[in-house]
Image (cartoon, rainbow, N blue to C red; front, side, top):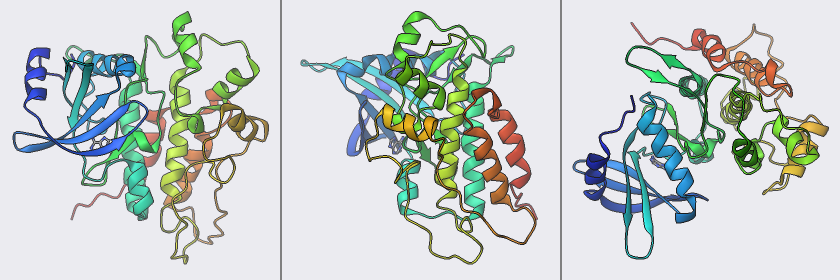
Length: 327
Ligand code: ADE
């Protein structure tokens, strides 16, 4: 039920790619722009020590139904020995605008764009989280575990798609019991700045790990931070007649140091219960569309995982805000 071609075909595709320039570098490895026949592709080359991330991501793409507009499209995977090390490749669609993080540092958004992007992110997340047990389509619930603006790409029609499934984990049912190895892994996953309160407590206080922890709830928290990043670059978020927006900010910028540690995050997020700032909009008019998004964000970054909205609920709440452009 995966979307990939047979592995031998994938290898053939990968070996016909003309490599172009370097696009991005991360802790996992490096992303290059490439060319396959007449289309551009993105080639993610993993560090040898990141073999587990490569395996995880390739396995998910090859075994789960991940074909969705708002999930980065998989094309091929390859592992080859270049004499010194094994090269681990993941080939996907290429997106000109790069990551949402890159996009937000160089662009501001209209209300329209903000709402469309928010809807697209939550649609991709809902697909990941959704369990599908149809006749043809089958997939398990997948928790992404590293949602952040650097792991989301912007398409040419200003939609977003979720990428980087190297840390993702299949949850049998929504609240599956975690294995001891999964528990051991918890301590090292995700990006510190986006780690949910329940994990910050766990890390720092050695609180008893709850094996029934719902990992999709942590994705919802991280997604709320991403939605805040969108809002913070949207014209109108700081009042109707403000025309200059602040520079792009990462969540919790100015509240923690630039490379925060887990204890730094715990002080701010858990002990002081702070969240990224939301301006008080003294708008006399009735509730506007950005207010609805603000409501969603504040319901999704709550301390208690159980009170956060589910991805499907958020989709339904944003749906009426989308304007249909038909005549
Ligand atoms: N940067 C990281 N992944 C990318 C992709 N698939 N397309 C364009 N830029 C990227």
